[in-house]
Every structure is written in structure tokens, then in C-alpha cells.
Length: 594
Image 1 (cartoon, rainbow, N blue to C red):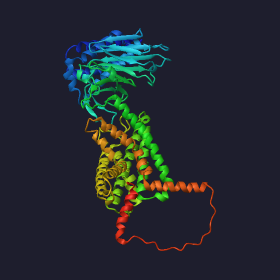
Image 2 (image 1 turned 90 degrees about the vertical axis):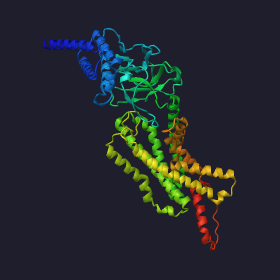
Image 3 (image 1 turned 180 degrees about the vertical axis):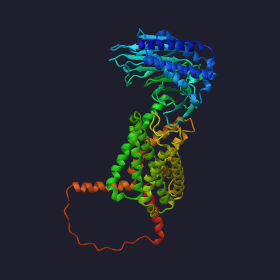
Image 4 (image 1 turned 60 degrees about the vertical axis):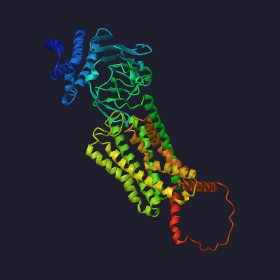
């Protein structure tokens, strides 16, 4: 009896609270009034999850109240809540409305309930087990905006609850930063979406594997100059997650179905969807984005295979090839090979936060080791070609080279981990890398810029030295250009100079630099194999010699002929004044440029 009285009291209190909220929301509200109203709606939603007293009448009042809160007359009050400790109020409202949708679906006597307000419309639907779906799935349309859910998302073995909400003005108040999955784009601060906003939840649901969720969003105003669609970005935000930012992860623009009046997106997940116009006007269409991702994946796979081939040629002939230059080359190959492997397995790691953080730490370290060994290559090239001192390169003993190549990057990573306490490593659910939010990305960018700058100066000196060599000056102009081009192409991958294209993508809108950066760096292992294995005279000579020895071992042995010992004669050595010239020639041949 007491429980019935308590339930009745809660129901009456909730009805009174809903009525008062509905009346108060009809007038212009101040920021504090909005806070109170949203918290009240959130409390009612929490109560409604446990007590089934939310009928359609109360649902209509809640939708009408929320619609009133989103009226343009309250825009100034919402603007005051965008900053500070109250910035989460719009997100709280979105989460509460999703809960209300599930409550309405569970308490409704019909399978589909639609409630329409001035600024939003909500559809609460029950999908019974073994339901046969139409070809285009489950659709909901309101005010020229719509969402289509594919049949594969539903678990046909049990009842599913679908809640679709189309907001007309939510984008004006829900200001979130934008995180690009493209690392070449900078994270943007709070932005307004340029279309209607759609929220969709399915409980329980299956993973979307083939068909995507199709969303058609009405533009808030006509954009006749944007028919190209290249400046539009489809974004999403999960209100249940701790990441308070829009993201373009898992969503792609459909240019052929987007025009000045509407924008069409296809997404691989359910959440809150919207579109905004990129203020930077970066002309990177969804087609370009797909191509760049494809090039990066295939390029890393080919690069990893090329690195393996390079190792397979050098390591068996290590005794005959061993030199400071070859030692640095092997370590560069090792670093780049590990980075390529990590890039290929990074995507599955995004599903686990701990794995994603570990992947970000590993990528940080091994990318730094790649740059550190490129710096060692720059030091050796400076000594061999600039100072013409082959023996001087040996002064950088193994201890010094390995300290720079493997130790210094470890020190940077350890300091970064200690300073940030792992914050900023793999924090984004969309990429396992360093965050730009707390500046931890500079722990990679700053050392990389130092190495690129130093090695770029070495490259300039190499070009100047080659230009003044008598051997080259005696050649025709065509041969001089060919030799210079080959020298630059051979040294750039080892010096990391191709990363300059990456720097240019931050300061220009030309898509060509994005393609050059992706191609050059994903195929770095291929360039190393070509120029420092296939075209390297010393490596080819040793490899051919090894093949000949191998054939002799496997083939028939010739008869042994006894000969008298040959009396050795003294071989004339170059005169002292000519040693410098011979050393220069040996240095150039050992570098493998010609």
C-alpha cells in the first residue's frame, strides 16, 4: 500500500513539474533559467527510466518544452552558456531527449510514436523480432531531413528500440570543437553546424558492416556557390562518450546527392549527425580522402616488403658490406619497417583505449628513431662528401651512433610521458597518435623539424660539392643533370627531406602536396631498396660475388691443380700527394651516388 502511494506521489509530482516547465518555457528565458530547465528535464528522464509513468501526453509536453528552449529568442542566453562550467548544458539536453525517446517507446501501446514540435521531431519505434524490413531499411523524415537505418543493424532475435530525433536549431547552440581524422588538418575550436542535426539510437544493435546509415540534412540557408561540395564535412558526436568534440570519423559526404539545399552523408555508426562548412575551404573531397588513405595503406605494405628485401640482401653479406654507412642504413630500415607495421595494425587498436595509448607511444618512439638515424646519416654524409674524410666517419663509434639513434628518442618519449602522465597519447577514439590539445604533439614535431632542417643543409652542401667535382664538370650538361638528380633522389629518403611536403600541407590548400607527402613517405622503404640496394655499386658487387660463390658450392668441383707458390712482388702504391684524390674517389663510390 505504501509503495502504491509512493508511486502515485512521484507520478503527481512529475506531472506538476512537467506542467510548470512547459509554462515557463513559453517565454524568453535567461541563462540561469535554461540551466534549471535542462537539469529538471534530466531528472525527469532519470526517474522515467525506473518508473513507467511517461505517457504520450507527458511526452508531448516534454518535446514542446524542449522545442521552446531551442527557440531563437533564447539564442543570447544559450551563447552565455557556451563557455565555462555550463558548456555541458546542451549535451545534457541531448542525452535526456534520447532517454525520453526510449521511455516513450517502451510505454507506448503502439509500435511507432511520432511527436512533432516547432524545432524538433522525435520518432520512438519498437521493432519486433523476425521483422521483415524493406530494401531501404527503417526511415524517418521531417522538414526535408531524413535518416535511413539499414536492416543489418537490427538484432532480429529480440525486440529493438529505435529513437530518431531531428533537431532544426540544435546546431546553433551545441558548439563543440572539431577533431579531424586527417592529421594534416588543425583541430578547430567551437564551430556551428550548417544544417539540421539528427540523433539516432538503436537498442540493442549490431555492427554495421556493409550498408551505411544514410542521412539527408537540410541546409539552414541556400549555398548556391558550394555546389562543388568540397568544403562540406559530415561530422558526428556521441553524447554518451567523454570526447566533447565533433569528428569526421566514420562519415563520408555523398557529393552526387548533395546540392545547395541539402547535404547527404553516409556513416558507419549511430550517434548525433550534422554537417558544417569548412571555414578553411580546404578542397579535400571524400574521394580524395579515400584515395589518400588507400595510398597510405598500400604504400606502407609495399614499403615494409621492400625493407624486408633490403635486409635480406645486406644481412647475409654483412661482413663484406659492414661500414658506418651500411650500419646506419640497416638501422634506418629497421625503424621505418617497424613504423610501417605499426601503421598497418593501428586501426584495430582504436577499439581499445589501453591498446590505443600503447600504439601512440610506440609510434612516437619509432618515428623519432627513424628521424634520429636519418640525422646520423646526415652526419656521415657531411664527413664523407663535404669534409672528404672517410676515416673521420669512424670517429663516430657504434656507441655514439646507437646513443643518437635509439637512446635520444627514448629520452624524449620518457620525458614526454612523465610530463603528460600519458594524457594526450591515444586520447582520441579516431586515431592512435599524439594530441594537439595539450601540445604533446610537439614532442615529435620539434625534433623532426630540427632533423629536417639540419639534413636539408647537408643536402644543399652535397649538391654544391657535386657541382664542383672535376669528374662531373667534364661531363655533358645532360649527364650532369642526370647525376645531380640521381644524387638528390638517393639521399632524400635517407635524410627525411620528403617530410617537407608534410609541412607544406599545413600552410597551403593545394591537394597536390597532400598526395606528394603521402606517396613519398609511405613508399620510403621502396626508394631505399631501389637506390641503396638495387642501384648501389658496392651492394651489387658483393651480392653478385655471393651468388657466384654459392654456385661454385652447389656445382661440380673442378680438379685441384698443384702450383708452386708464387713469389710476391712489391706492388706500387699511390704517391703521398695522390692519397687525397684517391680518398675522395673512394668516398664518392662508397656513398653510391654515381
